[in-house]
Length: 253
Image 1: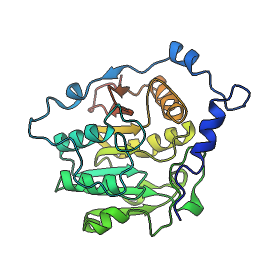
Image 2: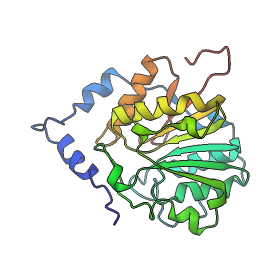
Image 3: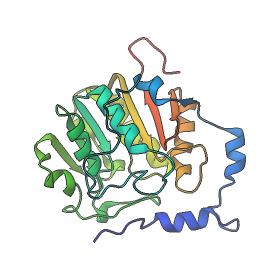
């Protein structure tokens, strides 16, 4: 049975407690470090007036503004990016119930999606949102008839070998939304990076300069990636980090 926020709830409580070893002085970190910000229009250009901002498939939706934060629209930004790119191949880490995959397929009819999620018994890490059985993972895209366009990979991302699925840099868009612990996000980025085509995008969810609670891990990872030379930015008015992989001969930052 799914157990939403299985480990996240405890982490949130500890991170707010000054007496806990997991307490994070986020105001100090925010003052010293930050990601540069990029607007959605700067990233993909002006959006068409007819572009719908609400996903057409709402079953088991698990992204702001439909769960958690109501003051920002992560889902609308994602669908606008998918609409603009019309990607041939999307790679997602963190399938959950498969609502995001279903809406990507609905928004971009030519897209093939590869999506990764560990069954509950294989999950590790602290900041984990869902603990699902293999049967529960991806049930939305399956019920909506998109299974023939989706390759479901059941694996912990620490053990993930994407070379079994891609021969080279062919992915147009990657969405990293699995475990949000800093070391997991760094692992996921470096697992994905070799398979992103030049000019492709990597999105990292739950990345925000407030660094509050579960937003801390991914933001820390993005700061580390910038120090490694990757041009990771915060997508304004969202909880997304974004990195465009440089064209051949162009520096990442």
